[in-house]
Length: 361
Image (cartoon, rainbow, N blue to C red; front, side, top):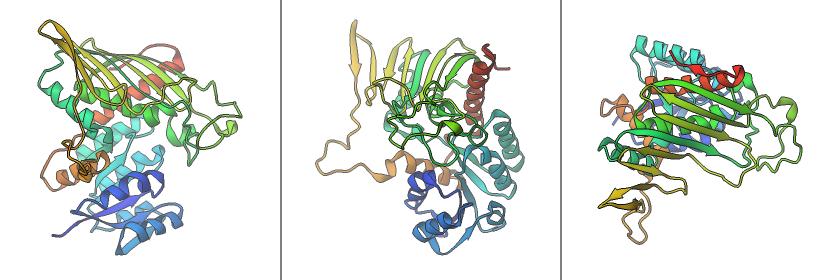
């Protein structure tokens, strides 16, 4: 079988921690080109994950000239997502761009426009759609188990977890802080389960109350207040066109005992769900009694049976994209749905800036 040739643009933490080890597990793919502005990173990636003849670049434009490359991963800081993705699409490459779609809504909108013009595939790295609890909740929602889902709460809370590498603390490079970095996953997950992508209005607040502290307790080390330009905490109240509401919280640093990954509570007219303690629980009324249903995601209870590696969310994300390229499936994260997430993030930031509600037109 002839494999699809992959180009990697950006060989930093997200490439090494998520994308490249996942692509290596997909039998239809091979990594043949690696680009990074730090040549040593691209060279190390090529040596570890590349084909014997893999090429190394410091300019993504040179990589895109290779007509044998069918698809690329855009794994840079947020500001470059749109520029590189647009260039790749215009070069005829299918694109999986790491989240968020772009550093701002205008850039994300342009990415959607170019995708429609070129007809290539574009998807965004929201791998939490493939978490076992999210897949289960989504399937139950599709069967109308929850009825009308009219209230949701989604968050990612780090007590301390301010990233220091790269441009994370710089507004120009990232477009924001905790909200656009980790809060984007919470928003995306809640909208996906609810299948509701029509926001009406949002009120948001952002905070950088802790940035001048010097003894931070941050696991990545103490941050430098002089370059700390973004928020460490954001909260928002979102109203959808159908009247449903969503509360969003995202933090890199917050004086709370709570520390979570992507968490959600969604309430409907027939039942509700949450994964607040790390496991999915569905609640409702049956035979006039309250019940709580907790699905078992262990591998069938069989001793020594490990979880199938192919079921890992980061690998599922790559397989879904690959299948879509090969015409064997559809994208789960479409440009249109990712665009809505970017619009909501921008609405929260704009509301925080102006002190007024932001209305989506």
